[in-house]
Length: 105
Image (tube, rainbow, N blue to C red; front, side, top):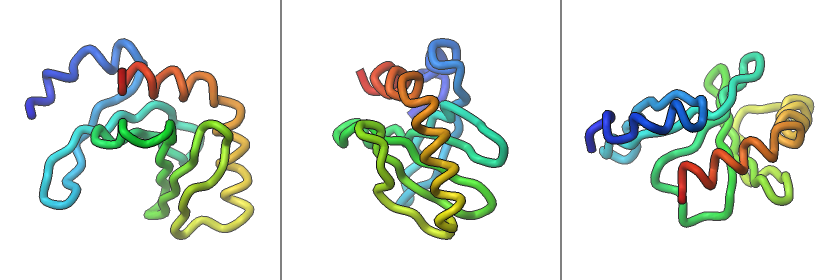
């Protein structure tokens, strides 16, 4: 897959496309939001799941459902950090959900 084929997405979503080697397959991912140390992003191969966002910072990761906002999975974050992440997702849910539907039409 050629990264230039996703060239319209950063303009549309104001995000950044990066490439992740996941299970020996190079997959694009879209960074939809940065807040402090937290990067909120989508993997390109997950459009068949309900809307959600992945979060990473300092080697920690989480997955958060967008509707309703709920933690699907977390590795390394403290309960206090997860509360902060849920607050950020809740405050930006409409924009994140719009970005999801634009990325996974």
